[in-house]
Length: 473
Image (tube, rainbow, N blue to C red):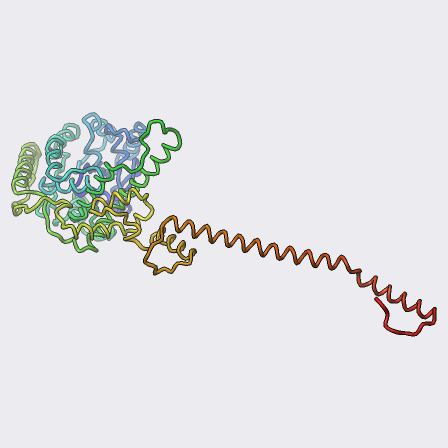
């Protein structure tokens, strides 16, 4: 048999895929193989893309052939494939997948979620990855135009090729899951003994990819919106071509993308905690929006129950939330709270290596117009350079009056000229002393010659009979 987990997105898929990957050894010991064919990070995303219309996958036909060989070489084995990308497979791709794993039987695992919880979760996911710059009400209008509010068509596509008996659809809710837990429910769906679940890696049981608090999420959305619309210094003149333009664009884009991928959300979450805003209450759905979404979900469940054999899907019982007081946005915070949050964000170490124009744009999202690098982060590299320059000019670190740029240049030039004059004087004195010593040595005869001359003078006096006395040199 092939167990194929096909999603859906924002319905615990990341936690499930991580759970399967970290417990692959235990699963194989129990008779379920989590194969390496088309395996990516925790899941079989490359393999799933091979059966979609995605242009991001390479060696599409090779992956399909590898899966077919795996199924043909082990017809008596049980395999598990997991990827939420299977949700995007078209009917032709599902048909090719069914042909590739033949003659194995298949069980399709598909989890759905009440739209009242799924849509805010999708909003959070799109926003924190930089894919959404609209506030929630405008985002909800887009959700009605997408296929997010209907899963019957998706289930029907897979059932047409694998059969309705192969479909196992479950609602992500404590009332419907086995023991109220998603991982235990998937474990049961694989036909594994319940007592073996206790041997799973504890790290695989920790929930992942959870939604952040609304303050951090709206801060991320506003920063991403500013970065996508601001002038970050990219050359716009069409005459500027070649390496200069390419390098400037690559450096700016690399800085922005490096911030958005995993760092900006963590920075804003930590900043909201430090500013005491992480626990600020807020909700996205109004009562009217909640009622509409929940009604659409119940209609989908009823429509699907008319075609699924066996026990029908049970829609979770839910109550509408209280009336929404405000639409969560960064503008709902007071000016003092926004500035405090912005200061915490700008003080993060991830922002120290960003270009100044990027830092200024991030500061503008929180109402901070001044350049924050010199005022908020005293340990930044340019603040240290300024202190070193002042010490070079003989200025104390506590001096309050900042000299003008002209005076700083004049003082630096004067200090350089004085140092040059001092070096020239020392060189001249050294040269004169060396010259004088050399002349004195040149005017005197060597010591050996003087000794010979004195001895010859004594011998001459003795020959002439002159008395001894001091010799004249």
